[in-house]
Length: 303
Ligand code: 3HC
Image (cartoon, rainbow, N blue to C red; front, side):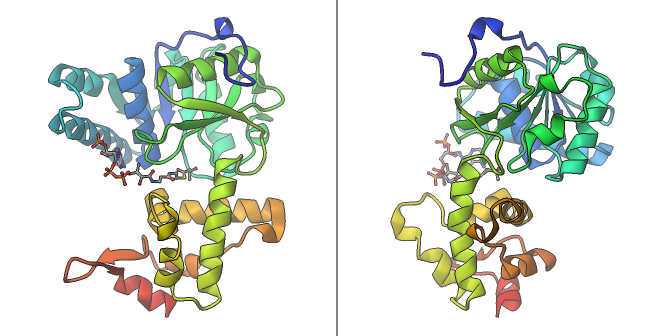
């Protein structure tokens, strides 16, 4: 059955090589998924060789974990590793059919990156963005061919989370959208078409939850009480464990985008900003007795 809003799959273009802009945590998870499920070459780029090497190293380490768990054969592990390469040059995207960017969540940065990619790719190459909160329309508007841009938003951890939010901007071509849906299926994900509105759907729901927890600790409820209050609700992770996995700066950035778009419906936490400014990665650590406890560096900021 065709997913709601998906054009006829016959319009989809073939994808025989994928480019990933960025080699950070999200980008390397994407590179692994594309290589493993599509079995096509995937090239990751970043601004310097050290970042590129780290990203490729992360993919190899994740493949080794799958191998250790017996989830893939040694042959498949070797093939997957061989499919993933890295470069500091976007010229490597010249023969790619689908390039997805997963760089810093800042509109000007994403626009610049997409313009640089457009300058080197073939005319029919699709440009996707993994943005979690920014306008796909705004990202595409200054390109020569905005019709080739589509939002393709994954969730952390990419290997496990089943959803992709596909975002159609007004200019997005039917063939581009059809390819996005066909790719999502090949990646064994469930795709939903969402409007190009700030933070789409899932992050809006998540950020309401996060916002109430951070508002509680901005109002003086101890952080561990506020975060643990939701544990009996059947969530797989408490909000702050989730925020640490996503990265506190990313969570804060999404909150800021939503506050800008919807005002006080979304809370931007001063305490969370203070944690970020102090370089604290999350709330929870492990105490000397092995039990979960608030990290001393988080306590120092919050008390
Ligand atoms: N990478 C790869 N695989 C992972 C992983 C990771 N980071 N974390 C867990 N897994 C795998 C495990 O290896 C395990 O696989 P296996 O069955 O083959 O061994 C499987 O997932 C289940 O893991 P666990 O048994 O260790 O742990 P849980 O049962 O607690 O599940 C979880 C882990 C799936 C991450 C679960 O805690 C969960 O669903 N958490 C909520 C995640 C969520 O809400 N994500 C959305 C974040 S928002 C976002 O990303 C949007 C962005 O725009 C900001």
